[in-house]
Amino acid sequence: MNPRQIIGRIGLWFAVFVIVSPAILFFLWMLSLSLKFEVDNAAYPPVFIPEHFAWKNYADVLASNRFLTYFINSLVVTGSATALALLVGVPAGYGIARMAAHKSAIVILIARITPGLSYLIPLFLLFQWLGLLGTLVPQIIIHLVVTVPIVIWIMIGYFETTPLELEEAALIDGATRWQVFRHVALPIARPGIAVAFILAVIFSWNNFVFGIVLAGRETRTLPVAVYNMISFDQLSWGPLAAAALIVTFPVLLLTVLAQRQIVAGLTAGAVKGG
Amino acid sequence: MRPPSYWPFVVPALVVVLAIIIFPWVFTIWMSLNEWKVGSPTTFVGLSNYLRLTSDPRFLEAVGHTLVYTVLSVLLPLVLGTLAAVVFHQKFAGRGFLRGVFIMPMMATPVAIALVWTMMFHPQLGVLNYLLSLVGIPPQLWVFHPATVIPSLVLVETWQWTPLVMLIVLGGLAAIPTEPYESAQIDGASFWQVFRFITLPLIMPFLFIAGMIRMIDAVKSFDIIFAITQGGPGSASETINIYLYSVAFTYYDLGYGSAIAVVFFLLIVALAAVMLYARQRMLWTEIASGA
Image (cartoon, rainbow over all chains, first blue to last red; front, side, top):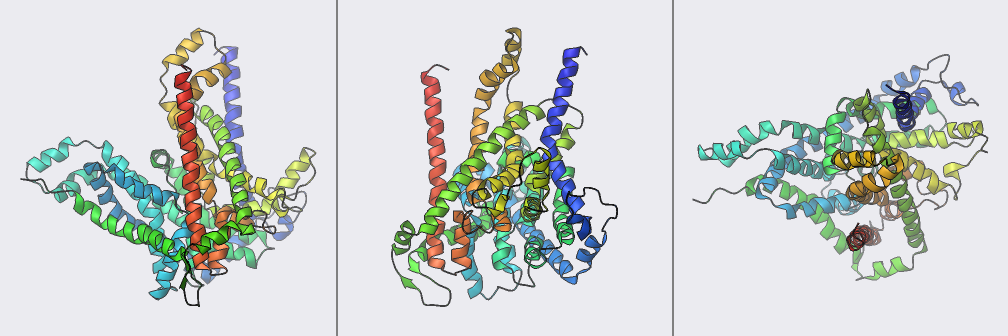
């Protein structure tokens, strides 16, 4: 390497450092807040690494029996909404791609543009009439607004790139369309399904606006539960930050582990619901 | 023999989409034509909910806040995201991992993030005022003052969504052929000239898409604003979406809320149309000037 290249390298690493630090520093600070006792969180100048770690902040959050309820609620809502979306969305993506019915994508576009609250007004009334408020069903159904368009959109894109030859060969051999889909198209599409699954899970898990309207005391999901903690324990930052980190930790882990799939999915569809 | 159709694959999804996307829209339009409050009988009132919007100062103020918030939340991530994409386009050790770290803000749960930002904005104990004091800037009130609340929220939104712009532009950079760069190098072009006259025009379509997506998300932004300020202090950060929430689910004035939802949707479509029009104009000017 000549001196110019070395300077270029140093410059590049400096640029990388500057670009990544807002994200890294933020999450480190979140971790720091969550591991400090109130004395340290109220100190000025701020304490970055405390002398004593307040592990009890995490223990308190995890030990409250409400937390377990909300965690299960989140699992049920996100799990069901994602499973249902894959069940209807993967075949739909296949059908739309094979029929080249690109106009149907307009519906997905409308769903993408519509503010989440607009769905809530009519569906809130509907759920009230059906007597479903107070159960998790309304939230599962309304989370489909987030998950179904993501899955369909990604699967259309994916099936458009998978080769047709195999499917045509199978059809000539007398397989039905369903068999072709089940035994030829679906196995090839597994990476695409993984992308759709990951993004649907993340955006459903993160969703806040649907829960804030539809969830009662027993049916809160984790983001709503964390929001409600703000109003109650405004002064104790430690447990609050610990709760926030616990809620978002699964998503952060998934982001770093599956960053390649997430990047592929986001650049293909640039999806985000709600 | 006619080959069996693909329709059976689409029907289940069609039913779901009709139930959760089309039906709500049709019903919302119908509700917007009614005086519809929870707990009292509904009456058909025609367009009067829409007329009421034109003289509702809180709504008009919310439109203003939304536009300011949106313009800032499109432009800042667009500029920063492009710079970040140019850096991530280079090869360096640990690029994949660092890209994963870089996109964490956009994937993290917005409410959880909002909560930490609220603590960071705290005027006495917040870490942001401490950081400002290190470089000699006096403490700010951030989200607790009407004049600084929208810029502060835009700061969060920019931190959160710059990664999406980066990813889209990065996709654009990967698609650029290497020949123009080689000839520019031979001609002795500077880094800035290369960026301005080769990279920028070639990634324009991607910047446009990124800008469009950013606009749609910024206009609809809810979680961050609601969790940090709930539209306050006073109504200084009340955007259309936040106002819609109060009308529909604090006052339970569902007819009026539906009218807001319809106008809100049309506003987003209009903004998208303006952007498309501007893009077309730009393309025609480019062609006309032979660029």
